[in-house]
Amino acid sequence: MIDLENRIEEIKSNLVSKNLKYIIKCKYKTIPAKEKDIYNEEYLKNYNYYVKLIKKLKKHIKDSSDIQFYTRYDKFNNLVCLVSKFDINEIDINLNIDIRIIIGDKYDTYMKATYYKDYKEKYGILYLEEFVSGNRKNGYGSMLLDNLNFIVDNINSRLKNYNNYSETYNFKPIKIIKGRAIPFKSVISQEDLNKLYTKYGFKIDNNNYLLKNRE
Image (cartoon, rainbow, N blue to C red; front, side, top):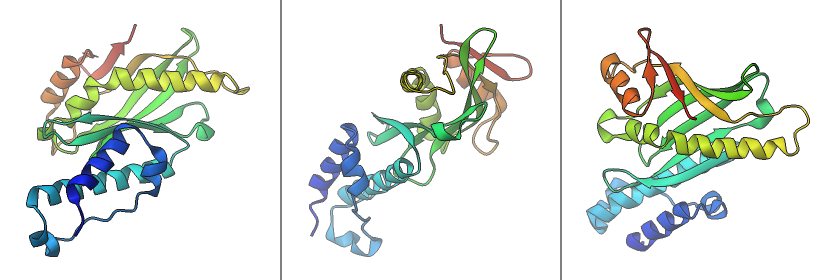
């Protein structure tokens, strides 16, 4: 019988320390429902959650040339991963950036975003193309917006590093976040989405366009 408590702590410890070698090599499998009578119900639920979480994170690491992730605890005291990733080799005029909260469940909360330069003002802009919360009641949308400046700071740091050896593209730091508030109808209304953005420092015009100055 598996020692679920120790395995849960093992996975959590390696996620918090961002041990990529462990994450990539981890091959733990979820325990099927038919074995639920063997284990403590709470430990079994938590173990399956963290196995699913690390599997999803491993997939993102393998699929990306540049990924950053950080851990936080949600309101259920579950560890979740804040992730930003992009592929510098795919940049043309703009750079696609995926920002999300990965959880040990089906539905991630994510932002599809685009980086581009304002050549006149000589700074970078992050344009939010899409923002979808996996489940509004769980607070992941708020968590993502609350940590967005932190995430962007780390994206800026990574882009600055590329400037040290790139001969074809010079990245400017992201100083402005733009976008449009488009509600995911089954999850949130336009009014509530606007209130959420406003709570985290965005200005919204009558056409629901977003603006946040990071300076």
